[in-house]
Image (cartoon, rainbow, N blue to C red; front, side, top):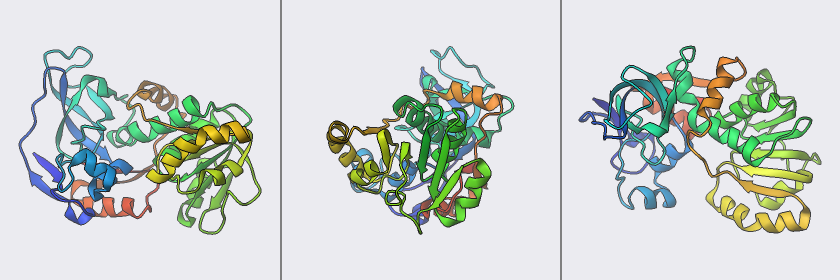
Length: 319
């Protein structure tokens, strides 16, 4: 089978397509023929080999050589202990921690996948797992979003942000999106009430306050974010700079006590809310925003666009 492989850390240039052996599922696993796979920040971190990801995947060279966690495809074989699915079922899910998605076939634990609705394309399904879970768990589980609130999404034009605005609108909130110049028209078309070009304006210094901030980037001081919160407001981070995430962990309780503003971190629970996303999709309330999809042979372009932060929504590769 074909797979996108990397044997050393670096940029998209170290990736290559190779023929490798097709995997076989264990007793509690499912073999999936992948039709679409999406790129996530975690994939890019593993590719570049930053410090934390080298601890996870090998200090000098990657142990797991196939990236990709958000997959969508059709079941080709099942282990003897699998009970919820059968051969021929269309499924999707997040293989975070295992990876191996950027290949024609992947093995997945039964608990890591969900049924794909017939009305959902494979590209749409691949765009959902990680980004949508972060949006749901950030807004609902940690953010406790309420009708009538003012919400700001920092990094609004990527996967998490484009899901988050659609979910937030179901709650009747006023949403501000922050991103680069080239993504502002898309944000307006998606229903953002206000947009901010971060290259021209710092939302933490413009005098506005928000009841809830959902941050995909986490590149500023926690004190800056706290300044942009209204009294008793909540800041939720779903990813970004490791140093800033540690700062949120350490300073969050102190800021909450002194300023009566809440700092919270989402620890991703993969695949937890996929059935909820199926309900929203089938009801026409949520639609994935896809950059591409790109053919497998266009993977250098897809990874390059993702690495530069130029993508709109989720970058999806057709396997």
